[in-house]
Image (cartoon, each protein chain N blue to C red):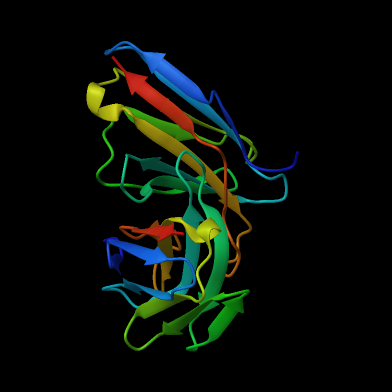
Length: 111
Length: 114
């Protein structure tokens, strides 16, 4: 069962902030965040491991709440280059270790 | 270029024909994934390998789909008797074995069944 992301789409003005959420029905070992631009392959952003860590990547950061089986991606002071569709990928705690992707969040940044 | 390579980039085929796609992963990566993606959707898991062993195949996947990774290096995905519903982007990704490492994606093969 794939993770559920919210919101499905968001439109921001350049400089505004956004939060994208990823929720799983399974206990998670890790959460992976990717961005995909139209017609291109998904590009890796960051990985979060169980333990509730928070990571940062320039003005993009993420948190992972292991107990709630949720992760959030934070984009601050958004830039035009942030436009694209964001996917979370999850690896569950038990059994096989396949990477399963979420439903996606389309982010549009306007000048 | 040492990234993930997929061939062909585009394939147009008539309904009922068989098609085969190839994926060459990053050389030191022993895990290889195949995904299918349609417009506006996330990558849908199809199957994955660890070295030459196919560890899981999606239960949603028709028996018309088969994948191999004979020597633990490149992989092929074959679709037999293609249907219009098979039209999609087929993505390959590879990673090291550990679940803590990122997966790198190829540029994909866009299949159009007419």
